[in-house]
Image (cartoon, rainbow, N blue to C red; front, side, top):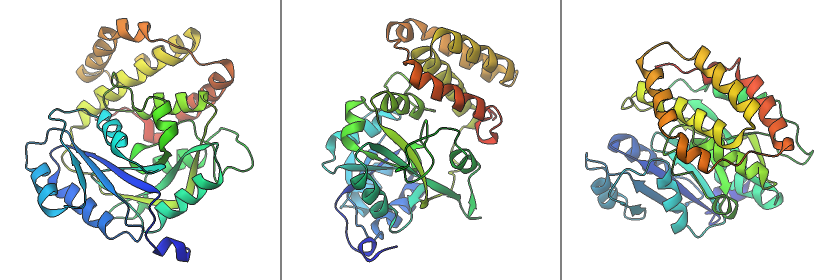
Length: 304
C-alpha cells in the first residue's frame, strides 16, 4: 500500500449491521479500530438480546451505535447511511473485516472515477486464508465495461465486501425494505446500473470473513430463494421472469424449505406487482449474461 494508506482517511464510514453476535462483532470492531485509516464506524444493532448493544456502548465509545428497537435486516444499513457524512460507505458484516489500506485504495478509485458507484473486494475465508468460492464468479464476470474500470464489471455486489458511493446509494433508495435480508444486493445493484453507474471487482482490495457459527442456513436459503423470485418479478421482463422462476422451481432442493420459500414469494406477489418496474433492454442484456454464468456457480447453490 502507499504512504497515504498508512494515514487516517476521513472519506469512508464503515457501516455494520448485527444481531446477537457479540463475540464476532467485538472482534470486527477491534480490527476496525486498528485500521490505519481510522474510519468512523456506525453499528446498527437489530434488536440483539445477548448484550451486543451494551458491549458496543461500553467497550467502543468511538462507535456510533444505532438501536432502532426492532430487527430491520439489511435496512439497518439504510439507517446507518442516513447518519453518515462521508462520501463513501464501506459495508461490513459483523463477521468480516477490511484489510489495512483497502479503504484508502477504494476511496482513491471512487475519487478517480465518478461513474463508478461501488468496488467489491476479494474475500478471504478465515482461518484458512483461502479465497471464498464467490471470488471466482466476481473475477470471471461475463460483463463488458469501459476501459477505465479498475477491474471486471459486475452486475451485483456483496454488501460485506463493498465500498459504495453514498449519494448513489441514497439516490437508488438503498436496500429495499420489502426484501429485508438475503440477496438484497441484487435489486439495488440493478437500480444502480439502470441509473448509469458501474460496479467493479477490484482484487487488490481485501476483506476477511470468519463465518459466524450462529446462523440458520436453512432460513437463509428460504430468504434467498424468496428474494431471488421477488427481484425477478420486480425487474425482469416477463419472458425472463417466467424462465428464471421455472428454472428455480426445477433446481432448488425438493424439501419443505423450498416450498416455504415459494409460498412466501407468492404471498408477496400483490406488493411486488404493484411495484414492478422492468429494466430496459440494455440492462436486461447484462442480466441475461449474469444469469447464464451463475447457472454453473458453486457459490450460488441453494443448500442448507
